[in-house]
Length: 206
Length: 164
Length: 196
Image 1 (cartoon, rainbow over the protein chains, first blue to last red):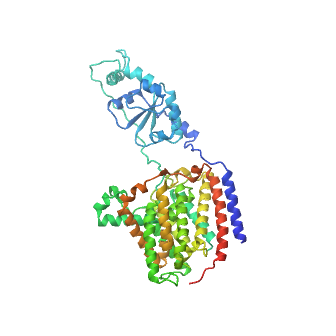
Image 2: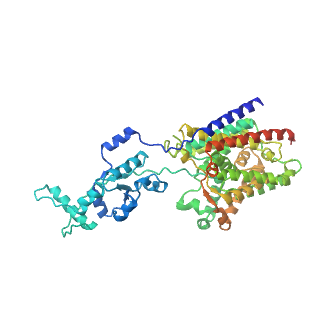
Image 3: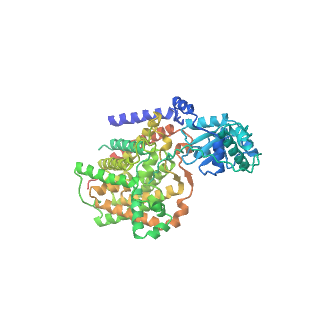
């Protein structure tokens, strides 16, 4: 009798405690502040507009553009095949599978660099990988790819090569430059997509 | 062993299973795996066409290589060890003196068929759905548990001759 | 932070070994508790032996408390734990059929394996019956499929359904379980078990 009363009291007590302690529902940040600082030091998450133009011209299937501006701005103009995830919705359930994945390279862009970089910060702190930021955003994109300015004839060779590439890209994207020259496509090294197994909840049943 | 102590240990084993692998216990799923593999060997086309069997043999994967099959093999070993330590190892048919062995075996067989069918429909048996389900507070767990125990209580009167 | 294998803290290869170990523990405890005897299992429905009730519910509430307290100390991520999905009609009707099977056969799949391990022939027959039952289900699957897939509520927890916290629900269940144990103890004294 006594041991059973004791057991009942223990379970009752444990039950009372667990009933009234607030639930632990926070999604833990996977990276500490130090780890984040280390990562941003090397700026490895930035993607330049030249690199992006190159991949888009070559119709690279492993990239996914994500426009984090408001839907109104998205409708006015957006890059081809971009997905619109406004910054305010970045934590929503429906976008988790796009942001937290190991198959494609997500390239976040906004008008400038700041907003896209903020989105990147948040996604990185949640432990998501394979997200990158378009350096300079749409503003710089327009400036360099859509309407590249011609370099002076005394510039270095690679400057001229870059300009030729941009001219060709601009033609592809429907920018102002109309050129008949063959643009030299610069081959850029793509960062390796971190292929990781999605941490799916385990199977169970029966 | 004191039933309450057994329950506590059972709960701890359950928590350990969750802690290590993220899933709880089960039993009927292992039998299903065996049935699927047998059907696949005997009549592979039929297995591939069926909505039920094909799920477990798609892409050439082996239906026997599942968590539950290994777990049930463990149950077999564990039960044997326990029986051996307690001296309960004995080949016999356990039945009430008022009924014959044969009747008991027939009842056991019918009970098994019912349970097999019911476990697939109910997506789990008492260990997998009711016990594990209740531990994670799933609705299916509670519903299963109430349905199983409720029905058994309801039919108990009609089968009392076999037990008391 | 658990669960260990889904979080890849230990390798996937351990999964089956751990399954085997868990099974051994499960089987050992069940047999020690006496679940290898169909008489003891059916006893709760006639009042003379409530061992099923005691072990089952103690196990369930220990499991609940264990998981919630682990989560409280951040040792487990409850979002990665398998919650079995609720298909309402499947659960109810499947449960009814299983209940009938329980009272007729006197076993459930897990306990029948246990009992078969110590030599009970009726348990082996029961186990064989499960095969036939599942085969029957597989063959008639198309007919029962609409019922099988009906009323899908998702991987929903009872606490979410009612709208209370998991801890509070656990507390209520503990109370309910303690009451049931008390009633069961009284019933056991009232309906003595005849030896055979």
